Image 1 (cartoon, helix red, strand yellow):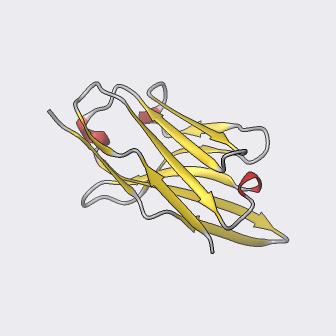
Image 2 (tube, rainbow, N blue to C red; image 1 turned 90 degrees about the vertical axis):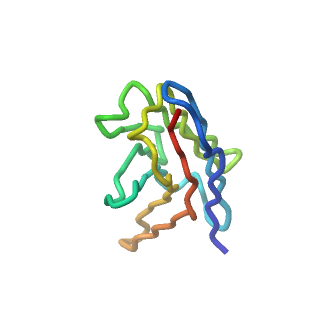
Length: 120
C-alpha cells in the first residue's frame, strides 16, 4: 500500500522557519522525483519545489527561491522542505508528491497534506 505521510506543519510567526517531512512507503522511493505543492484557500494547487530521483537536481517556484530548500534522504524514504523567512502568504496546505514514469506508464502519488499557517 502506497503511503506518503507529511509532518512538521503548524503555526509560525512571520520571519520564522519550519521543516516539513514526507515519509514514503509502498514503492521504491529512490526511483521517484519528489515534490512539494501547496494550496491556499480559494487558490489552485501550485508547485513549491521538486527534486529529481537521480542526481538530486532541484527547482523552485520563483517566490520560494532563496527561502525554501528541498532535500531527500533515500535511506530514510523521506523528502524534506526547509522553509525560512516565512510570510503570511505562505499559509497553505502543503502536499507531498511522488512522480515517476516507468515503461511509459506514469505513477503519481499524493500525501494527505499538512497545514502551515504564518501569522502573528
